[in-house]
Length: 79
Length: 389
Image 1 (tube, chains in turn cyan, brown):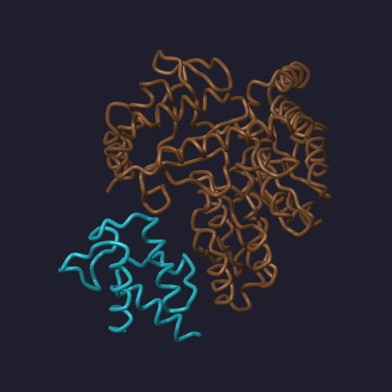
Image 2: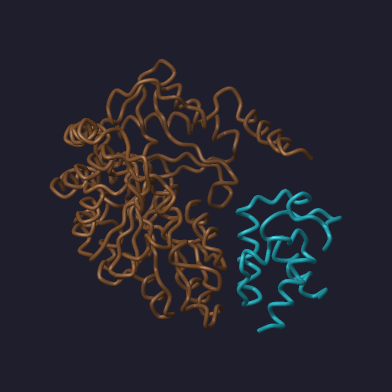
């Protein structure tokens, strides 16, 4: 899980600057002020990186890298 | 938090737009299809979607006036109840004939067409694969369908192919959704390649030609025609609120199942049908579109002039000149300032600010139509150069 979270953090750095205190439980929208289009771009980056398809409804309650990592692990486990 | 408290943030966003709010421009009086009085000044309209100048076309106006006198101001009902008149059916037959397809379906708005078609085509267990730059109405149509929603990178056919592959068996229950001409950036979809990849996965392709019908293609049938896929594309949606100069939306298809959509499309069932006057003006506009290709040819010439002018200013342009172009500004404040200066100088263009823009950029959107002259395009370029210095 840690590994997936770190990989997501690396991907996120390509989209927006990440403050030093940002961690897996930080809020992607409130703490990083990501706009909806940036979130979509980030999810597409993650899909291509992990070679998976993430339906939008699976992201409805995702606010943190940790939660997104859990969704990705779940999808990879189901594949 | 109380129900109405969320509007505090909305008000803050609105107030942040400053003394001249781009979302609240009022056209005081129209002078023509290309000029209007705004803020007490004659203004060149270079930010509408009046691609063929049809809003002021005398034949279209007279057809609407006659229908208004003969059939009244509205239908007072939906197409599935009392709202289908012979003129609605006639418009559908004329649209089907225009495309050479067996059936067409008319909606009250273009937004409603996208919601109505997408929610009829897909449901729970199906998938919708949207181009990342797809219009909000296409995203809303996907949400209404309750299908699984995915996006692929804008105009990236290889990425679409990869993403359809990842869906496995669900790919054959997937609706791929793209626009022919993208409304903000003015670029075209690589439709032939998208159509091929979509078909290879057993998926269905829906093309929104809102900004390209009447504008592109030898016969004005949009990018599907210029890309040579009229015979193989699955569904085409469009609007009458741009090149036709009226309001309304439509869907045409080579698939006979389109005739069954009225029975399973809630946005179609539960909306009052277009007024007889609107339908009459739309039919007149379609007739003009078919009979006067010179409008389209003149527009194409202006598109090349616009592209050349933008190039001379050192700005990036699309490979294929279209009536839509965008100019990226370094940030939101400079975009707002440029937009305000242009308006004060008698030129109306659109401004697009994040988060509603591709790449989170601040853009000026320019659009021209067949009613413009070469001098209008030159004026637009000259005044644009003034705000970019």
